[in-house]
Amino acid sequence: MEKGETRVNKIVIGVSVVAAAATAFATSAHAQGAPARDISISASVRAEHQSNAAHASAAQAAVAGITRSDQMIAPNVSVNVALPFGAHSFSLSGTASYSFHRRNKQRDRETMNFSSGLAMRLPVCDPTFSASLSRRLSDLGDIVTSPGANPITVENVETVKAFGANVACGKDFGLRPTFGIDYQEGRNDEPTRKFRDRNVTSYTAGLGYVHPSIADLLIFAQQRDTRHPNSLLPDGRENGNRQRSVGASFSRDIGSRLKGSVEVTYAELKARQAGVRPFTGLNWKADLSAQATSRMMVNASVSRSTSSSLAIDANYHVNTAYNLGVSYVVTPLINLQGGFSYTRRRFEGVDPAALQLLTSDRRATVNGGISYQFSPKLLFSIDAAHERRSGNGTFFDYTNNRFGLNVSLAL
Figure (cartoon, rainbow, N blue to C red):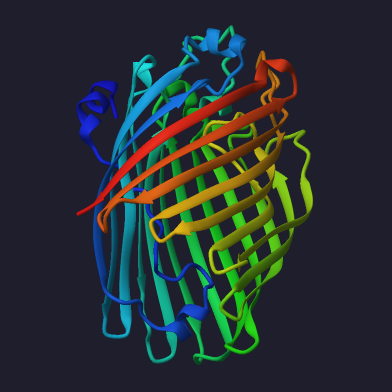
């Protein structure tokens, strides 16, 4: 898309969506049945101040030509659709927004995330299909802007399309073999970022066990191929990597107050690029939701995974994350939220020709907010957060304070 077309499309609404259909191996959805019919739409406006909208140190922001302190206004539309038909169901949900900046007007862009799902219940096997589309500006904290870069770009837009098909066979309870394939295509719109474009294909096969009084258990094997079509190696092959993993996942609801899931995999990742250190070891993720009291809900999660980025100049990175969130109902109309997150990343296969090398970083964020349900359709909320990043070298270090006000109206 040309920049002129991007400007014309400022009114384009992006949709950020969580598909309600069963994901790749959510075998318990078969037993739960189709969701209730629901169609809801809401509109909102968010005003936000950031002390460091560049997500960069003063030196890096100066190189990129970004004013660190900035204010934004973002109109937003949300939609949620669940349409059961017979034993099957279709789902679509999301939000659409466009950000207007007071100072860094070159960063005015739409944010688009869209996802849908189709879950079918057939006599022997239950197939599910998913599709998603997302579009957003790259986080400036992930784009290393070197003094020698020509041209220096801070307007890169990332577009990601994904498609998936999965099938689980067997009865509602007991053993259920599962198979799936997922394809993702990521593209950058700035010519200087095209070398980070990627195609990712994943194949998964597993055996699940479903029982309402025990748990949902899945043992699986997966292969994930990541290729960069615009980054060729000396032998003509596309750069990228291949990861093979085996693992198991376990999820269970313990009464009405406690819900949890755990997944552990053993992974081996090898890069096609010579000289890149391979990854061998355990990845994991665990989530726990607890109704601590009649008014307090607590959510906690930990994870480690390997991934690649459209913005980060590395073959892959290892991401370790910890999250804690608390919600407290003060009155039926007033709700308090708070949370803490910590992320550690290690990058492998960084371009040695770069003037500034980002090889690792750590980010910590503390946030809090309050919401007020003024009427059944009108919601007000305010929130604040403090973010701190520490990388290898002070060039990548920054702090950012964020304060936002939201007004939401259900249509």
